[in-house]
Length: 232
Image (cartoon, rainbow, N blue to C red; front, side, top):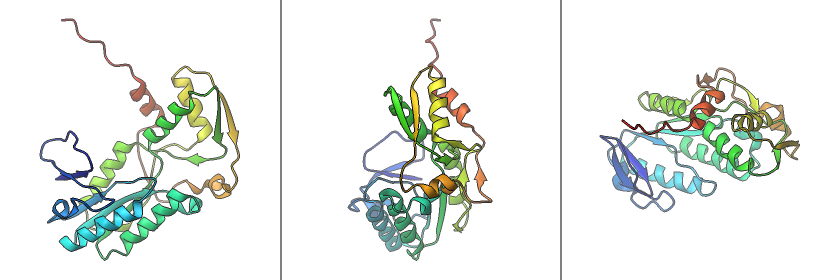
């Protein structure tokens, strides 16, 4: 197994690290040479299409590996926004690559919701988008699903994946504040150009795969204080 990233990191046994910069293609050729499957999870608010194009070109030059790409549920509802627009373009690159491909769209990760809630909680008054209904999902469960897809034949666009509960952003933020014993004034704000989102555009399509871990379970585990050191 190989892991590609710009900077070295600690890896488990039987995993080889390859320093790669997808933005300019540096290091890609040896990293993808001879591989059967590529799970493409790298993303950024800028340059996704360029990075993916470089990866796909190197992959095609090395053979015909199965490309598994993780994307976002409901992109069409927010297609006028910069990042979602780039994700849609990147999906199309994967489809048009000539390589066998699988695309899994997932809802927002719990850690994304957690990090944003933590940052917003620093303010005494917290504005949040009104009517943004989502079903956030545990990233570990998404990783398991991606591993399963990687070991299976290319399947095209597969069923969406979402968490087990539907929330809106106001509820999620308030649940975080309750769990961290903080009091803040939460103000839902209706944003222009979000009618499709407020109509459920970020929710998964029928027949989606559902994770088991709840937001409350994730919060409890993430906020659990570290065990006291042993004095034996």
